[in-house]
Length: 401
Image 1 (cartoon, rainbow, N blue to C red):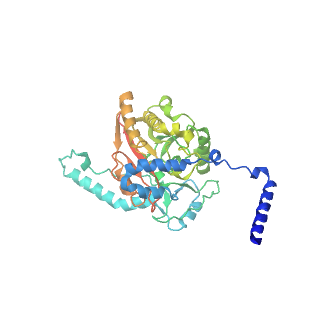
Image 2 (image 1 turned 45 degrees about the vertical axis):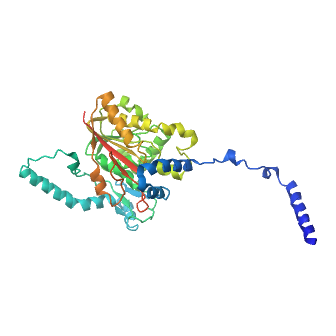
Image 3 (image 1 turned 60 degrees about the vertical axis):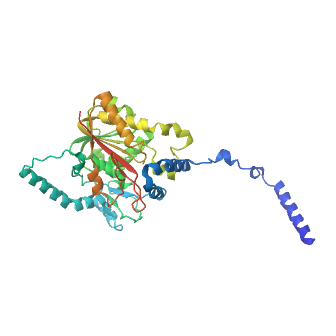
């Protein structure tokens, strides 16, 4: 009986405390109005599960785990910075320049292949193979001035932040190492005029400048805020004497309209289009294209991507090369866009294009990256836990007419 009285007394005291509780603490939280029931990242995951499980098949479970895990970065070395700053990275663990290492390993094969070709020419072999599938991919020419350090497969060590040298130039730029591959595939040579149509935030433009081969570089992005960030990146890594109007032009135009601004001008064009950015869509809810208020923008992506690639084709000169790239696994945003742009270029502008074989690139860097097997058009780096780079899709076109 005494225990029952004590319980009633305690209950009464609790009710009394409710009367003195501030009103703001009595209001029930209206979570339905303040919290999204299904965040954009969850919507993205559901969308990818339904599409990529069909597109990638047995590969999707491992790719899915990698996408949901912390990504791996590479350190793009800044050749314009003082050497003393760069040596700090060389002492950090067992990181290596994956471009230089791959070239060193493949060099004996290239020399042997050139000897075989010379021997065949000397004996005047008249037999020709008509089957294109039997032809081996041509040797890839790389700019060894581009250096990007990575840690070995399975090593998740992080790079130190970049340090400025005496001229306030930063030592390296942290980026997805697979993002360097489109710059390598573009094969910039001495004196080339180059257009980076969707350049922000500036990592690929910075990689292209490391070649020391560009005669003139035009970097463009249709967003004024992203262009401001792009300018800051270039100012942090490139000497002032190279940031002149005669060598680099920074613009903020609508890239889809570039064909009306400059045509038949550039030797090399990089079209790194905006896309669903799969990894960001799964990991971040802020600025996520799977937000419900951006549904229309997401659905228009393939159309915008096709217009950008077509603008890049028009900007290239005859014999020039165009590199289309995305950071999504989506076949609709990758191969379908390339096929549509090739068709429109021929039908509407009379431009004939040739797809350039990039198999030599995948063969050279298969120890560093995992590539999607047997793509009918282009090449794609797919994420893997041991080498968590990508996704990066790329397809190279050469303008014939």
